[in-house]
Amino acid sequence: MRINSKCLNLSLVLGLAACASSGAPAPEPAAPAEAAPEPAAVSSSALGFTSAQADRGRDVFRSACTTCHYSEEFNDQTFKRSWRRSSAGDLYDFIATAMPEDAPGSLPPAQYAEIVAYFLQMNGFEAGSMELPADADALSELSLAPLGG
Image (tube, rainbow, N blue to C red; front, top):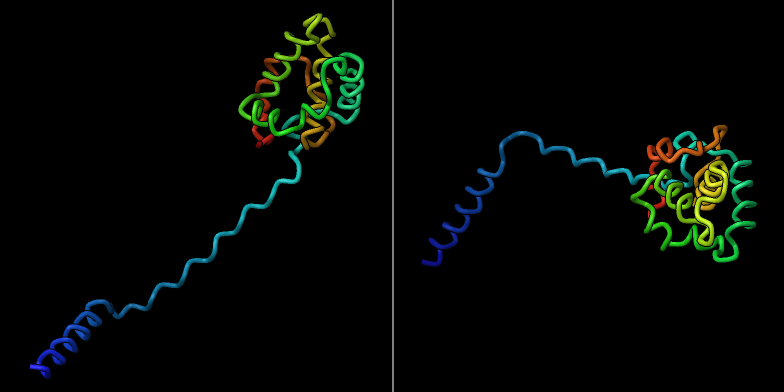
């Protein structure tokens, strides 16, 4: 009985090996997926603000906003999580209609756009050669998704 069980086991192993082999060469292993490069900064062509506009925004922020706010509030993780699903138009509209708190909408539209440019620059968006328009509808096409967070 012992011989029969060895023969049976050998037959099963050989039979399974024959079924598993199709005679075709084994497929080549897939090339490892390349990791996506880490984005250093967002391209200016997507957002269109200038360094000069962001600098003016910093100056406006310092004169009109620092009574209540610190610059660091606008490039921390809370800010990024809050705005990453929004557009630059949403941010512009919020600032232009709610700030400064004691006189909402009191700044010229261009200054609100300058503040948005300043916030974008603080968050790693690269400046380019075109200024952000002072128009929430035009800015609504500009996603803040690269903020991540």
